Image 1 (cartoon, rainbow, N blue to C red):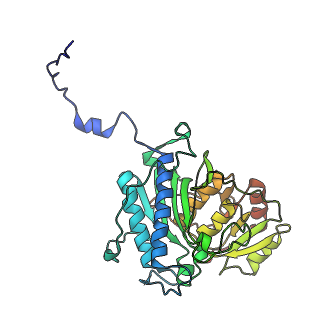
Image 2: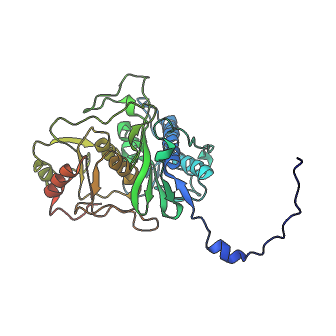
Image 3: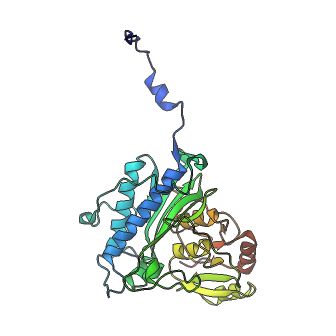
Length: 349
């Protein structure tokens, strides 16, 4: 019974150009593994951000590079984006990535953090393989906001800061993760689930995917609290004028909550601390909203522009959410928000 080694078969002639042009198997990527990478890297990036600025330490946040009026970029934004992009490429070399900070090759080259191979199994306990979804690679884009609410960050309002890694498929927000580096350093007005104990702070990472639900990393029992209360409407710290107040007043019994950071406000609706985010006339960008929208969809919520149209995520297209954003915990609440904002416009920068 010795194994007979057959002589090698003649090598078939292949038209290389033709075989390259039409691969027999279309390239796919696992939604679960991509979401796992997003969760791991968002959490790891949050440690980089905390390394740059520790809560309550009277920080002057270093390395400010002004990208434009009121749009600062810090060493933390750059370090976090470089780290996330380089680490993501180790696991998914062919996935398209759009990062808020653009191409950083000329700025702060001495700030790099070593890339790490993301832990693609970190969601295995909560997301069985048979519920995984294979995504067509050519339809996938990862949208990174390494440090949402930079302006609030530079002012020391760390509670609004978040690292957002969202994945769009075919132009729609699909899965992703958000880590708030300072979540447990501050009391939260609605849920009151955070320990604002000096020295006991730290981040919280939420992840989600359409069909797999919304989860808290490291807390398998977490469930989104049911809102038995008047609707909480979260709006901008800086841009809540009389027109927006009039819209809030049209939502019966609404309680207003002011907060910084577009991603932060979207996450407050996703995690149940608010019921609706009204941003009908303020500009936000695709990297601000992709991860939070994916998490809100995973929790059963809805996101549209102020006219009720879905947001689209097209790499190489227009990255502005130019018709505003309305996000709600349910379709019924979204309908209230759309009615309240009817006729509003135009956009302010």
